[in-house]
Structure formats: C-alpha cells, structure tokens
Image (tube, rainbow, N blue to C red; front, side, top):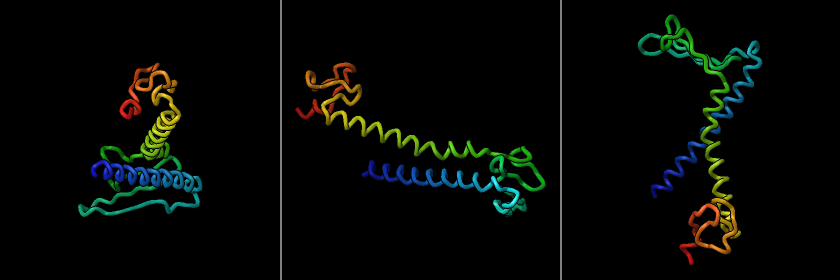
Length: 140
C-alpha cells in the first residue's frame, strides 16, 4: 500500500513538473514579442504594506519589490533555461528509469543477463560477465 501511494505521488509530481516545463516554454515564446505583449506580469500587495511584482521579460522571469530590495538585491532574474532544466529533471529521471527497467525485463525474457546482457544458458543463476544474480535463480 505504501509503495503504491509513493508511486502515485511520484507520477503526480512528474505530470505537474512536465506541465510546468511546458508553461516555461510557452512563456519564453510569449516574451519574444515582449514589446507588444507587456501584460505578462503579476503584482500583489502584502498585508505589511509592501508591493511585489513578478514579470516575464525576454531575459527571464524578473521579481522585485517596489521601493526596496528583495533579498538584498534590487531585482532577481531567473533565466528561462534554469526554469526549464529545473522542471525537466523529474520527468527526465523517470524516463531514464523506465527505459532501464524495460531493457532489463526484456533481456531476462530473452534469456540474457539483465545487467550485462550476456547469454544465461550456461549459468542461469548468475550473469557470466558481471556475476549478478538473476530472478531466474529463485524460480528454478
């Protein structure tokens, strides 16, 4: 039960991260026409009276606080490539894991070692090159 819940959570996180990755790409495309498209910003007031501003510029996502510094800086600029990499990490890692698992299970079904890919006919319980034990060892 715990494993299924963790897997569901990872799947949801992957989908959310992939959607954010697409949003970053669309935002970058939209800011290419920044001179005609200046409405890509969010502005809000905090209960303490400070006003904050976040906008999409051609150089990246810019955040600042009116009248004062934000985290000791006049403004913070996060380039789009940083946002893209940050949001693409989880889907990329899951894709790599999925392809490795499929390759490994495909090798075992063809009688090959899941780790190194060598033929298991002579030694079905261990891979002849890497020495890894196989799932076939427990079934025989």
